[in-house]
Amino acid sequence: MTSIALILLALLCLLDRQLARACLAFIAFALVMALAWWRLGAPWLAAAEALLGALLSGAALFHALGRAGDVPRLPQRDTTPRSGLRAAVRWLAVLAWLLLAGLALVGLLASERLSLRGTAMPALVPTGLGVMALGLWAFAPHRHLLRRLLAFNVLGSGVFLLLAGLAGTAPEVQGLILVGLTVALGGSVLGALLLRRLHALEGSVILEPEAAHE
View (cartoon, helix red, strand yellow):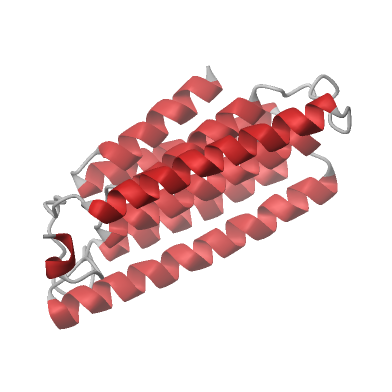
C-alpha cells in the first residue's frame, strides 16, 4: 500500500497544474516516505524525512509561490505551453535511462552479486525505479521552474528508495540518504530563491526563450 501511495502522490504532484495543490501533494508524498522509513525500522531517517523533506522543503516550495514578503506572487496555475522538440529529446533520454537501469539491475541479479531476497524489502526497487522515472519524465513536458523543482525532489526520493531497496537500511545507508536529503533541501531552497528573483526581475517562470519553443 505504501508503494502505491507513493506512486499516486508522485503523479498528483507532477501532473497538477494548480501549483499550491502540487506542492501539497509533494508534502504528502514526503510524509508517506517518512512512514515508509519508519516501517522499515529507520525512525531517525523517518524523522529527518518529515523535517527536511516535508516541512522545510515544503516551506521552500510555498515560499517560491510568493506567499510571503514583498516579492510579487507567482501565478498560482501553470499556464506555460509544453515543450516541443526538446520534450521529445527528453522523452528519449528518460526511456534510455530506464533501459540502462533495467539492464544493470538484471545483470546484477543474474551475476548473483545482488540478491533482493536477503533485503526483506524487494518492493522498494520497482517503486524506486518508478518514482525516479516519473521525476525524470516530468522534465520532458514541463517548462515551469517550480514544477521542475518538484520533479527534482521526486527524483531524489526515488534514488533513496532504490538505494534502500538494494542495500537495506544499515547505518551507513541511512547516512548516505540523510546527506542526500540535506543536499535536496539545499537545492530546493536555492531553487525557490532563484525562481522568486527571476519572477521579480523579469516576470518569468521559465528559462528558455519563448521563440525556442514556437
